[in-house]
Image 1 (tube, rainbow, N blue to C red):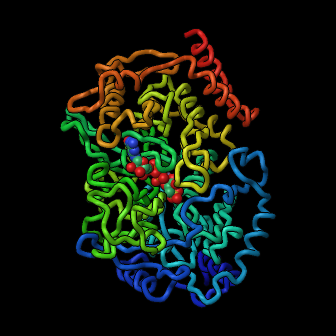
Image 2 (cartoon, helix red, strand yellow):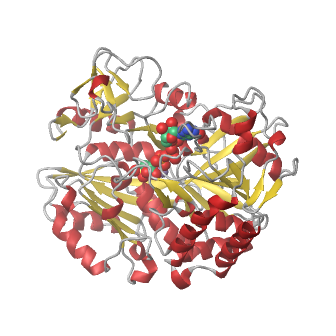
Image 3 (cartoon, protein in one colour):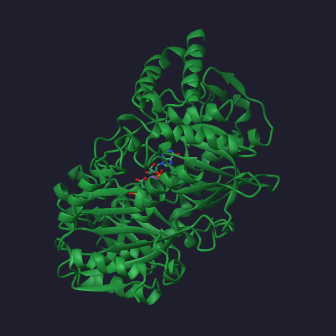
Length: 591
Ligand code: GTP
Ligand code: SPV
Ligand code: MN
């Protein structure tokens, strides 16, 4: 008798009409076969799906070039479709589930004619974790199948785990003909279903990632008492040999991957990586907050990655690897057959093809690598991987950092007075937009908890859920805000960032363990300058002071913008958030 998974797959095949169905087993040989096929048989426009790169310098690495319009998440075409509009909130595009399904059915009918439909059984989280989820995705492109094998725990064992249950998470994906007019990413949280057509790009196509592990999972978390967050998970070993675990939320392309594996500028401190993008936070048996990484790979921003900025990622990418490593939309050095991007070490190679395969030179004034070009690489390849990575229970969290990209106003680090005040930090977060999503870059937008594009329900209710979680956790983590992106009058970053961010983390740990005091300002607690370890730091003392400065007159427009944003959620905004807003406004007025 057919299992529920088999029945569901047959149903999809009737709609998409593929030439064949291929059930992935997640094995090494299979990955190799898929890549071979992608190098020879499948194409996107004029490009093969994969091209083998220099295997000596970049073991198991392959180049993928996307359709030229398909380079980032498309938030405008992303919908969350619960029965009621109010459940989706002003933070989401919404349609009735019926309307959305009719549209997607139309776009999907016959969309896989002449193609193979790949069936991908995968876990988000470790299979032995009580917090993990079993999922099935179908797709019609080998690039997505191979990417999912790197990014998740994929294999036959997932089918055994699902067995005769009907409750697996469902992902339907087809690249269609890449027509941006026919591109939609639809979420049906009540059914645990994601349906995406028209894009092969990461966040639009690897449906376990943002679509399930954040949008649908955040909905589940609201119902079941946990949190799905856009966060790094890391351990930091201090000079006493004690490892403290923290999480950090930052919007897309605002420094999570770099923070998660930073090479410490302070010799006595060391960072251990658990995750760089998605954390699932549950209250553990002892009442503390525990984090697991839902993923098993990095889908990271290539430009800016170098031995200087992020040596551990270069080591991850160049290491000999069990899993393949994919480079998407980077440039190609044709002399050496190596990937290249802006910010990589060394001089600009003489003979380069840009991300679309056209001859390129610096004089053209364009970027050789697409600004959102990315690598897909296994976490198991990371030299700083924490020994707790596969721990099914996760790690206990002592601090939560909420970061963003703000060229002015927001201090390098601020500690919240208490949990509710910290949730208000999250609610009032803003960040300047990046190339990770289609649209204008560098525009300030409110992005609470870095979850604006990823919260699968009304964000006002999300703030309520955070406030409530604080009451249920036995020792709630301390909450901090962080901003490594402040610039001076000349537009130069005032803080070196990267490995020097350990100095911020050290202060966070010192606060968590009660080792230092702090200076109270109207917006929260900031470090006394002398408590920031400046051993070997190349920042003028004056600038360091400025990084913690609070200027009341600059906060007027900020407060107005925060109020306008929060008012958009109407009665959904919890009382505690309103109260914290009023308290902040009056402290600013009095200062
Ligand atoms: P997503 O994968 O989109 O979620 O991004 P992310 O938050 O992981 O960002 P990532 O670490 O990939 O950094 C994005 C860009 O910001 C890269 O070009 C980095 O080089 C740059 N960056 C990261 N950390 C810092 C920092 O501390 N200071 C400065 N100035 N730039 C940074
Ligand atoms: C992000 O945009 O936050 C990413 C890349 O991490 S994606 O998987 O496309 O969402
Ligand atoms: Mn991300």
